[in-house]
Length: 284
Ligand SMILES: [Mg+2]
Image (cartoon, rainbow, N blue to C red; front, top):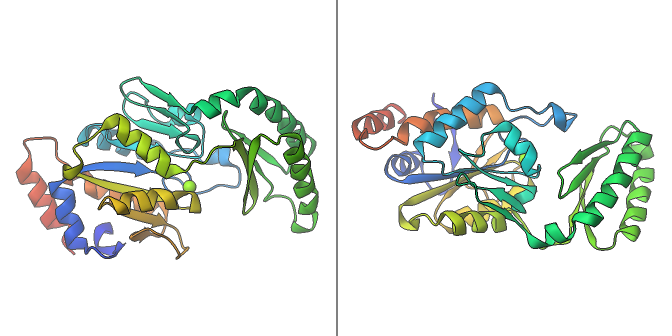
């Protein structure tokens, strides 16, 4: 059974999706961690497999670089995964974006917060060095302090440390996530804003474009809603049920398998017969 026929989609049917994929230009928005690669104990270990990079490169060619990674990670990290000349890379939820044209976007408030971000980075590095169970992700314009390796009975001390930092850095935004704190510029911003910024720059012919979004966490919900509101398809990865997403996949490997199957549906111009044949093969 193909990944397409296993995909849970509502309200569209798999047949409708196949037909849309074969007839419309796809614009792809992909979260990274938990969507393209499984979440790991240490985020540094969540490397993009070379086969996945190869697949994304092929897709980029097929869909004329209309493919964006929209991630909490910093742009510099995303640029180590994929060639910025072939992808739209949106780091820090899109506060910083690079386009294949070489143009870049950096939210002015992120730029303005740079000095204070450097100060708190220094504090966070000291805190993480003091307790090796803590992990600090440096995304340049935001930071994430993970405490999932600290036993629950000892986590109160982490919360106290963060409270102190909040008092010291009142101009920054502290977000409480299930087992981490995310700290960055105080900006009303989500992945939906990132998509808006990307489309503003790329300005595709909207009637002809099918937006597809894939993500695994609450941070992806605004992206799902943005895509749904424009007649696109959104897919939640993982087990959690409550989501704006219209479809779901059980794991990153199921996403990769799906992308492998939609690849032939997006033909480079002049190969319509092959597209139709692939669509027939994928019918459940
Ligand atoms: Mg994710």
